[in-house]
Amino acid sequence: MSFLVVTLLSALLIAAILGFSLLRGRKTREPAAAYDLRVYREQLAGVDRDLARGVIGEADADRVRTEISRRILAADAQMQASTKQAGPPRWATVAAFAAIALIVVGGAVGLYRQMGAAGLPDQPLTQRLERAEALRAERPTQAEAEAAAPPTQLPELDESYANLLNQLRDTVAARPDDLQGHILLAQHEANAGNYPAAYQAQQRVIELSGDAAPADAYSHLAEMMILSVGGYVSPEAEEALRQALRRDPRHGPAQYYLGQMMVQIGRPDVGYRIWVDALRDAPAGAPWGDAIRAQLDELAFRAGVFNAPNIPPASGPSQDDVDAAAAMTPEERQEMIKGMVNQLSDRLASEGGSPEDWARLIAALGVLGEGQRAIDVKNEAMEVFAGNPDALEMIDAAALQAGIAQ
Image (cartoon, rainbow, N blue to C red; front, side, top):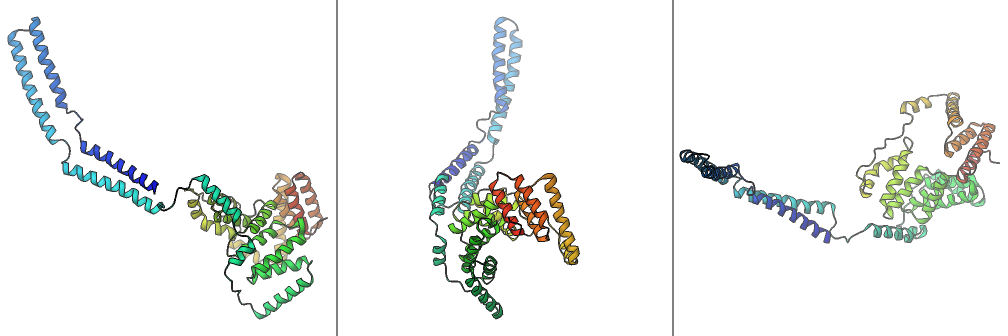
């Protein structure tokens, strides 16, 4: 409220200054005839001085006085006429002042009603940061959020699919150390909308994978936790996101959900920066990239950014390229994949690349069945990133995925 009062007083002061300038009119501006009068009077005094010194005669002095007096009368009449006609009518000046006051004061009130919040107390930056940190530290845990969430109705499954899912549950329960079984269970529980069961299975996947668990495993865990409570990012989900980003700092889904968490705790500025960084690396068609673009303008406004960068989608294969690839024979498609892998390999050999690129090459070679080549690339990557534990961890995860872990 104090800010609103200050705003109104400032607007009234501005209107008063403008109104005073209008009402004062042009009184302080001297007409040209006044200057002429001073000159003529000075000339009269000069005639008397010249006559006293004997420079001119009495007859010449009278004649000059008469001419100067005539000019004085003409200048005085001109000045009186200009004074009466100067400036607009007084009623017009008063009307202009009223219009200016209405525009300035009314505009200030209208803008504040649209963009301000008269009922809120002052919110200095330090106080907002402290409140955001407190909200982050005191927010509900995953279990508390699930207990407080309204019960969800699971979608009805096809009978055959429901039977298969029950069989999978029984099989995994009988084999608690079956990594592949828990991976399948987490996927199908998520497909069935049973997110609490899905993230519990995913937790077991990470336990069985140990330190070799990739970034995707933690990202999937966080996503299932978040979906189980309607979009809320709990401390446990945040930790899973942090683990994913430790393994892959540019992991798009993890960046998306981490930015969403920052918005939830009152730090849209941090969330905006995270989303912009994620969007710069977003591949074409990434669903999380589209989700960021749909919300970025609103988040930029909340973060106080009025010139949000326009980040176009990353270039990727066109629909024609996709259709052409679909029309290929398996042999042709395999050759195309080999060509892409060879291009990546040549680029890394000549220009180098990030740990993610090396890990992608190792995983791709494993898919192609070129185990020995994948081992050679892994050994080279271990030398390139010696002394970088995060990069080495990523390389080991890719080697495990490729089936060449030693």
